Structure formats: structure tokens, C-alpha cells
Length: 398
Length: 102
Image 1: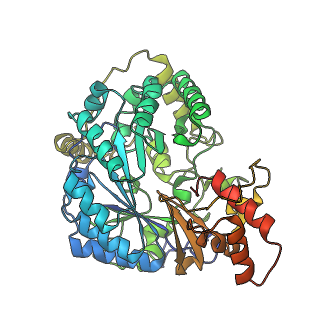
Image 2 (image 1 turned 135 degrees about the vertical axis):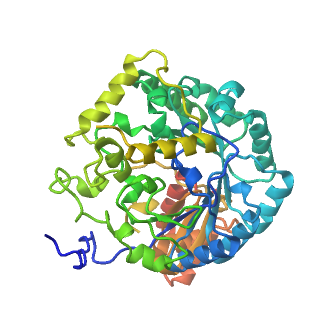
């Protein structure tokens, strides 16, 4: 039997030295006025209601900046629900961060956008759910489409670069041309068309949201056509859904490589969705310095570099390209976060991805089970069910 | 700066900039010194490019006040060098193709 008092050997790293974090994501709150069916927040977010206060956030910003973080995202939930957002942006800007506000737009009034601009906010990314009021409002379970359009005008009127984001799935992929038209009409300089990544609430609703191959191919062709027509006017990013790939994404550019996420309650995460992983205790900024969290904590060292890898990753000549893919996806689909991301066709579990893709194309209309909106009641119900059955949140049954 | 230097992307067919152009960094971008990386970086929405010394010296001068010949002259004087014109023009062309400059 292993002597548990022995320290666990540190994994071998790509380099002897670990590079500093460059990208800090401050998830200020899990509260959100929207209830989007594809939200990546943990499905049991309602269990985590504690939020760091203003001084604690400022301390996080200072420590992360001192380590070398230069990009800062304010996200959530909806970060505008924090009435200290202007204070935090001002502090971040003074520290030298490039400050990004990632928002649904709800709560962005003339008064607040002026205050944010005065505080030195660099960029606002505004999310839409669709080009139509009906679908936008259905997917977010709110009446927010017209509000968002007014916010888009407000952002433009204040001279911020206009970056629109729309998450894509089975429901809105057929509208992609109209979504691009909407972005152009609003004067967007950037449009991020991000196919749903299946974590959190999106994983819960995967059967409803997963598009067919034909939908994706058609959408990509439309995007290509627009790119040719509009030139430099608007830059369109199209993020492909990895279930349709044969090699995994280089998730987070590697675990503990550049990304540091801080959840509303101060838990430090190596990726947005790492909270769903079992067997890891995520250090909290109220207990540990950011420096120790980044360099010394077990959670951040666990999947760093290559030492943690199993076969087929361990001996794979492509391991430095994709770093084994996504740990959360490996866990959700194979129940072991140290397995190869099953998106990879070298994974012995790749068939599980193929099954999902096959099921998506076999189905004409999404149905079978009702779509689950992200709200407190559903979150509490899912958390209670998970603890009742003993299974982990969001896990696929083998 | 390895793969992030536009001058190294020779395969891109980019037109040489007009000499009357006054290159200026777009508002979206911010150029700043990062001690942790021991380099200048270019920051933009959710992204960052680490710059080598020559790239940063050129971009630091892209503030809309100089045309191309003035920019070249300024660099040649600062580094006590001659014949930088072609490299600077190639870099400006690459930076424009990447959407960094107005």
C-alpha cells in the first residue's frame, strides 16, 4: 500500500519553469438575468452563492497583475449585476490590464457605460442568442432582444469597438446569414460565431443543441461567402464544434499554461468549467496567494505538461500540439479526466463522440426531453439529484 | 518574437504602403511594456501579441504623426543605422494586413 504521507511527485513539466498566467478571468457573480440553455457555468451554481467583495477582488487583480497577467475579462453570470464593476475596472486599468467586459448587456445604461468608459474600460463583448426576437428570447428565457439592440447602439455611440458574440447550435445555425446581417447593420467590427461547447448547462441540453453535420457545413459555407463579400469591414470568427473534429482542441492552451479563472466565491480554476471535475480541490484566493495557487497548488499542477498523460497521449507524437485536449470533456465522456479527450480518433472512447453526432443527424427535430433553462430552481434540483444518486454533476452515464 | 512578426510572413502578398500614409495604431489596440515577459506586447480584445524589439520600436512610432519616410528617418537616427526603409515598409504592410493599423 502506498504511504499516503509521502508527497506526490510533481508532474514533469514541458519546461523546468512554469510560465506566468497571462489571462485572468474574473467571474464576478453567478447571478444572471438570463437563463441561457447553453451556459457553461456549473449546473450546481446555486450551491455557490458567496461572492468576493470589492477589496478581495482588487487584491486578486493586484496579485495576478504582479505575476504577469495582462488580459482581464470581467464575466459571470452577468458582471453588470455587481455595482462595484466600475471600481474594479478603474483599478484594473490603473494596474495596466487590458480590460474586457463580457456581458449580455442587461443593466448597461447610458450612465453606467459612461462611468465604465471613464474608468478606462477597453472593450465590450455583447452576446446575442439569435437574429430573431423569438429565438433570442426563447433561448435566454427572457424578453431581452430589443434591449440588447439598444445596448448595441449605446456601445457604438460611445465609440467602443463593437464585438458581438453569438453561441451557435441546432436552433440558430440555419439563421447564420441573418445573424451576420444583424452584426453588419449594428456596425460590429468583430463577430464571434462560437459553436456551443458542451459543458455545464450546454452538456445538460446536448441532445437538443447538437447540430447536424449538414447544418454545420451549410453555416460554414455562408460564413465563407460573407467573408469574401464584406472584406475588412467586420472580422468573423467561426469556432467549430469539436465533436465534429478528429483531433481535440488545445484546451486553454494547456492546463495551468496561460489561463487563470477566479469563480465568484474565490475558487481558482485552470479553466472555466474545471469545477465539474472530481478529485480536485480548487484553492481559494481567500486562503492562498495567487502565486502559490499558480505555481504550487495540486489543482494547477495536476494536468500541467505531459507527466499526467496516459496512453494513447503519452506516446503520441502530437501531444505537444493539443496537450491531450480538454480535461473536462475527457471526464464528461469517459469518467476519467486523465484520459485522452475522446474527440481524438486515437482515443479508445472516440465512439462516444461518434454516437452523439450520429444521434444528432438521425433526429429531424429536437425533442425527447424538455430543454433545461439555467435558473436557480433547476440548479438546486440538479444538485439535489446528483447528491441523491451519488453521481457527479453533468456526468454521462457509461 | 518568432511567428508573430509580420515581416517574416513573406508569403503573404501585401502591397507596400503609400509613403504619405501616417500609420497609427487602431484604437482597439494597446502597446505596452510587460516586465514579466521582458517585452512590449500588443493587447487587443481577448488577445495579445509579444513583440520583438524592432517590431515594438516601429509600432511605438505609429502614432499618426509621421509619414513613412519620417518614420524610417526617425528609426535610422535612433539606432544609428541606414537602409531600414525596406524592412520598415514590409513590417507596416504586414501590420496593416493584420488589422493593427488605421
